Length: 381
Image (cartoon, rainbow, N blue to C red):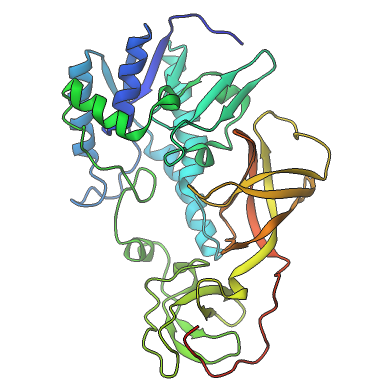
């Protein structure tokens, strides 16, 4: 799958510094570089939320500085239908989805890729920190040099057709090097902070945002033994392992240890919380997953096979064994117990520095230590 030395490549220019330097590096490599700015959210453009206008202005400034043409496109319909509708459905089902993963699969590497193809581009590029290797057999996704910024977790659902035409110019560049290079190039966004929040929607008070689409459904906050500590606003607003925003601090006889969400009891509309970040109820030695996806198109080998797994972005790779998989799902066990395995999130599999694919977590399994059925008086532990 070798490619010509010079290609016509369309860069997804977001207004951030990473995509700007990606475009610059492609120019240095001798490619014909063009840029595309995507607007994918139109529900509100309130200041402090989705700053699309400022992002576009930053992208225009970068394109002018680099001397490349910039087009704009609106994928708001595609984003709503392919990403946001799923996002809401998962929260209604009391799971915690990762919209960035679906956003990459359906918007940046499908809608954008298709649009770039109609414009005559040979491939597309983004400012992701990841590495794609084109071999005679297939396209392979590998970790970036910058381990802190590596984004293969968010890219693990890409397929061969998508990876074959993808370029990740930041594979061998660290974030400090990106900012330093942007400074030397005189880019106005050299010090622009990294975007956070929901993909293409931006930073906002998440509970307030979610309340626009999902109604409040209050219920009790309880310990595993049934001691009521307070009231939640709706199970959809909380995630496993959550510490902030519970509103139950200062409980009598509870000590100073913080509270964490351990489970959601949908039948009783109860939020179950425990004290201490390493409470047994937060730990599990395995998981069940569905919608398993292999980047190569084929499983990496017969089961059981040993590999590594990442349950969230930036988590160090964890030793695991995939003990079974089929069209119905997969079973994974870990060498050491994992904390806050969260339904709706992704488990992403690796061998050494190669990303193999992943699955959507449906449940944690095999609690290594059973929490007691009754509780002693709460103490600071």
